[in-house]
Length: 232
Image 1 (cartoon, rainbow, N blue to C red):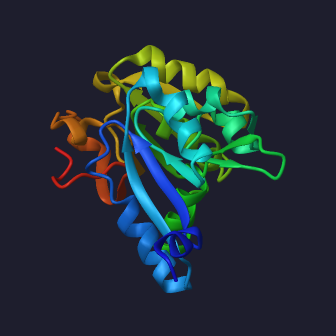
Image 2 (image 1 turned 180 degrees about the vertical axis):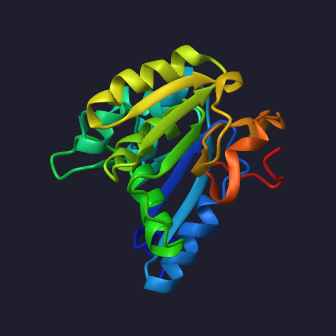
């Protein structure tokens, strides 16, 4: 069998972002593929905002089957696609792009679904009437707020260095449940049941100063971002 024939049997996937070198998505998806007996390749694609649309288009033109989207392009992906799934539409952010049978680009957001599955099935955490703090107000936060609010927590606070961004997300999702926003310096000094870190500070080596009071004996801390170093 020729190399071209072999490659034609392998589905091609990728993750796009900036930075992207830290991403473990290829390792994760190739492990899943090995467990399920699927044949696929999965690559990292680095680009910038100006070239995002063209790079995505070229990837699919050259046989790409699907693409994950990470920092900082989740909002750009939302504008790029032809159609949005319900979660992606509400979030205004996309973390997965694929084509349907008609050839249209579909944008989905699985951030919140994946987070909840991990919290509830793996960590056995129930969020009904619980206090939730989300640090950060980017595309990742937009993707997780609706699923979190659907669990009916007693409060969900979004804290961000630029408070106007947190306020915009609060306004976006206020019809889904009890949600509020504040700056990092205005975080209530009481313990939360769940603290979700959703900034890119760890990727940039920056520190996010948080009040120690937010961590109680039973607080679950969840980091949506990862790198080779611990989040400061």
